[in-house]
Image (cartoon, rainbow, N blue to C red; front, side, top):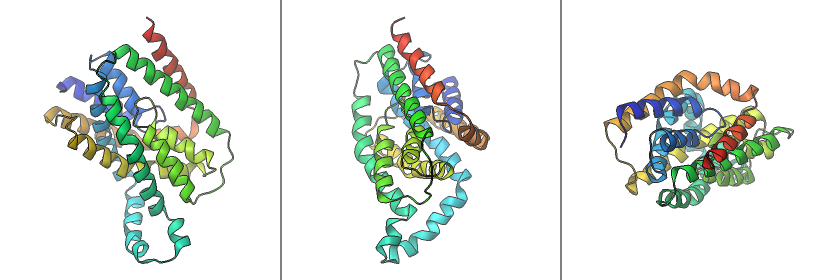
Length: 265
């Protein structure tokens, strides 16, 4: 359960952090563990739920892309050309989402079942995952980016990457964009594909935590979602442009080191 104050703060953090490759789930979980005194078991479902607000922001921002994909579905279903389907963004999204669910759901169940994790230990683990995210971004940034069309191998690899982003501290956008860049996908297309594949993944995660009874839906959880949506809408364009220009890998690594050091204090 969230208080009104907690809901507002968490919504703002989610709305700002979602568009940067620094793990919004890790940020909101760290706030809940270290400021609001939540357990990891309580914090993780809330962190996942908060993505719904920024999902709605992404759907508004990428509405033309979504409309284009929806218009392509009828001819996609009718087409018998294997090559056309193989190179389709729809195929990419279907495969990536399926693999994300296969990997991500067990990780969510595992993480939320860790009742004996202290807040300090969970913070240290999140810190380690933030460092991994930063190192992946550094590695990906050194690659030459050439392709725009994703192939089946791209969808499998990014689906696996997005599945591991169920763990707080691994940036979903950071790890999926890094995976696509490592596959030599052009940077702006990698960012577009990353946000498009987040839409079905977040919807599936919300359905999953709802069925598992991990989240109590009340007025304050809805309030948190509303603030995540509002701040997501306000910041998405600015921060997507910033993510293209600035190197956030060092921020991930520094924050990760601080989180690990906090365990020993």
